[in-house]
Length: 173
Image 1 (cartoon, rainbow, N blue to C red):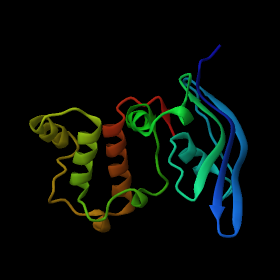
Image 2 (image 1 turned 90 degrees about the horizontal axis):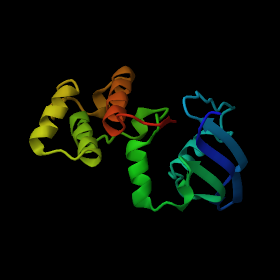
Image 3 (image 1 turned 120 degrees about the horizontal axis):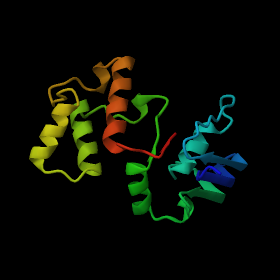
Image 4 (image 1 turned 90 degrees about the vertical axis):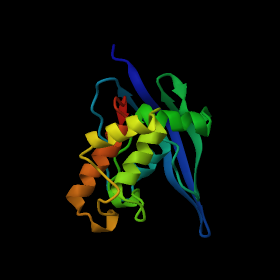
């Protein structure tokens, strides 16, 4: 029998607005098995992105996970500390955002952002960081900022950042 890698059980997420409580997810449950390709499909606004954000515990306020379990490799992610979640986000679960423009910093160069990601997720000396940076298409501080990039280039940057953060992710969302 295949191993369950991720189990989402009875997940409920509410958004608390001035107009009242909006139930974004109301009892979502599914399992993803090791080696399985799993698709979550639905119409705009049905909760796909909220589900993905919930798995990584990245639901922004006014949203809040109010009930359920998110079991990854046998452990409930909802019971993990923020520090433990950063470690999981940085090595075991990857997320590919629909729009790279939403997570790139418009003030920093792409090279600076890749270097920062490498520093956060890999224990490297300054010399090793420079060597690592050269492996990612000689990205340097002189390269253009986010504002100057086209969508196709942003996708390549997204892929490079994903590879730096998670050389061997177990789940890609």
